[in-house]
Image 1 (cartoon, rainbow, N blue to C red):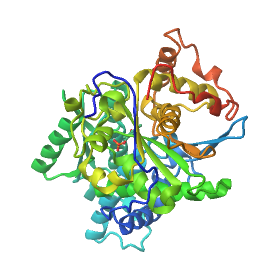
Image 2 (image 1 turned 135 degrees about the vertical axis):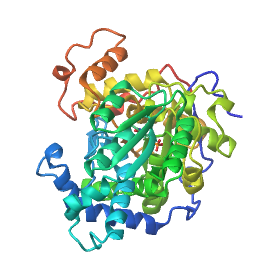
Image 3 (image 1 turned 30 degrees about the vertical axis):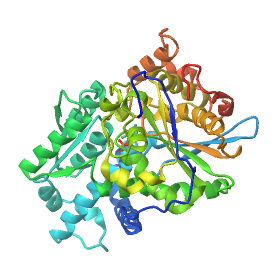
Length: 440
Ligand SMILES: *Cc1c(COP(=O)(O)O)cnc(C)c1O
């Protein structure tokens, strides 16, 4: 039985990495295609709605750059920059926004405001706004899901009720209040907060975005796979079993990494090695993989305390485990110290601003390579790591500087912006020695 009590990081590896296990049809290919076409139908509307923040040049498509870090030894490492994903600055702009667009579209269709062939920008008109103003959306979140849901709901004039768990950061609460969302803070963990929000939504007849059970969220996240495939092709990176991508995705309930994995396995099969990354004390997917079912981390000795608020979740989503449990190749747990260290390294090397949850992706690479070699299942040397950077752009400068100074042993951070190096100057490949703080 898995024991998290010592707080030591570790690695769970599938017996046959990128094996041939078929993906169960829990989330169908049809649901993903529907999500992709929904994003396309809404693009002109989103470009109009967010022109102020994203600039008039934004095409309304929810896509993030794939950034390459060529290293001196010729190795390639890639960053999927959802930390700055338009329009809400985290991976939740994929899943969370997709569910809201689904709701807006269904309302518009039912009320006869649009047909699937319409210019959806009519949904920004007065008739639609009057209608949406009677709708209430409820969600539980440690911050980023709430912000994506709140931002989009409020933009259409809906009421947004965001239930937050105790690890929610003050600045995330403040940004939600500034949107005009109703914020309810619970003194419980994330699982308890989801349950409370679900009950509140049912009682009020509101639409509940269910982070543990929503198929629409997973389908939205899954759309990222085709985007990555196109970007890899543009970069001329041919992916296959001989040269897989090692995709490191930070994991809370498992929705974002699960949806992305669902999409990647369908497109790349054994060419995509999908690695979920969790804080040591909140390793709920690791626990589910190691022990079966969806045990609570508390039962495995975990305390669910982590600086990575987006990942501090005590129990994995059953839907995610059913949909992609068999397809997850590895799960790696990382410490707070490692995440903080990587926030600083990624900033120094590449000028990319990450929150600790997102930096977890980088902390996992050295450990996975080492564990795979130790267990006699080494990964191809030219496998391409892809670090899924899930959030960070919205972090206020002050919070970010405090994080950087934590990583430098608490010395005052000074002005972080002046230390920014041009992109690509750092040598990432040299940095992935497993931290001396951890062991596999
Ligand atoms: C939500 C989130 C995750 C993980 O997503 P889950 O669906 O909870 O697994 C990872 N990183 C960040 C920054 C997030 O906001």
